[in-house]
Length: 175
Image 1 (cartoon, rainbow, N blue to C red):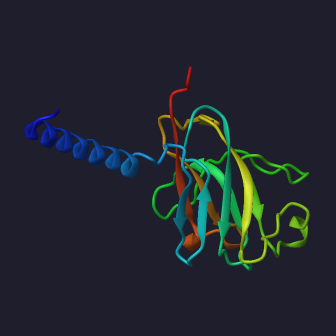
Image 2 (cartoon, rainbow, N blue to C red):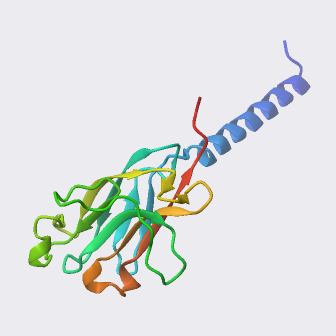
């Protein structure tokens, strides 16, 4: 039979263990690859399925609440200085309108963009698979900050009010 002192010690250790377990579960459950959401100036939101990757990776990027009258570019780019447009960016559109690191999303493109732009879904929504990689041309995204970016398209080139940036961090490859 345990003494009163042993019982108190056992209860104390159990409470400490329970507290530590609660802390670990509360603070440590968000994995590095968890989705990240950022709000824009007009209440729109941009979500990236994971912001920490290793090597070349495809991430799901979705948006909602975007102004459907304003076309946007969604791209993986070097993170710009405040107030500047993101550049350089990966990908680009070919004549078939297919890209893997950049997309033109517009529900009202000019006639020349009718087959290149992807229309918004109702509610200013979109969802695209964006390829991110450690390099954008000569830019090494392991040394220079790069991000999933949204900005107004070329019809509103200087309009920075639609900019949203979610940085992507490159980690060491798992063996």
